[in-house]
Image (cartoon, rainbow, N blue to C red; front, side, top):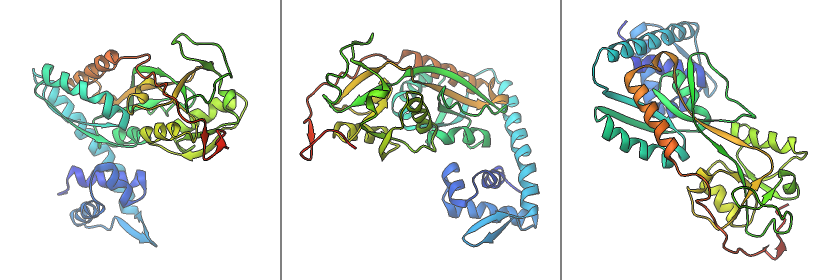
Length: 332
């Protein structure tokens, strides 16, 4: 059959994501480009692979059958690339990397500088994506490896076809408008920050991502363990927007030191009695773990993550008004 890997990958992604638009976002194409790939595949096979059902599309029996075999074809192709790469003495080639916004801003730049110095034959192409989608992107072959997040309270599913390696751990603190928690606790943690419990926020409004996300579910789990249901006033995914809203005095949220470096903000950062962590991880397919370029980049990312400054880079203690719109700062 005269088909291409890109055409097969579009079909496989369609079985995972269900819509042409979602496939386009995952692969970095336009929806029209994905449709063209499927149309070309139908011409190559002489079979109808999709049918329209209202505004959606679904795979025909022929499409389902080909998608199942296409997944194996793409895996075999990737294994062949790895095997060929292992025959070379030098580390060189192109790697496609998926990553979330915080990693793109703080982890990737120093890693790319080190790659240029130590492995000049390696070219890295990166794609910003939703952090909860990086695992599917690696499994589907649209990227070679990805930086992701794992939460002990809501761990990501462990797919045997993937390798998940921890790069670093971050502990969450509580970000609040300046002065919000004054007088609630006189104790300080090891960082010198005021120390509070999650339960101290039960009367305050929260800024959180969707409860459908791993991050949102992890925070909800921690709050429920502390004995309360957080009042989510603003559902926000973007870290910089979350910090801006806390600074504006409209809610509280949990943050890490890495998140705080994304946007200088005037707010209080308080240490939590509870231990809430997130793990920054690198994900690749199992058979590609020892591929020279993949192994080299993983080692560089580990070094880069280990060199990141930690602690109290963000000591934002400027005074914000204690009233918003003329009312006491309660958010509720």
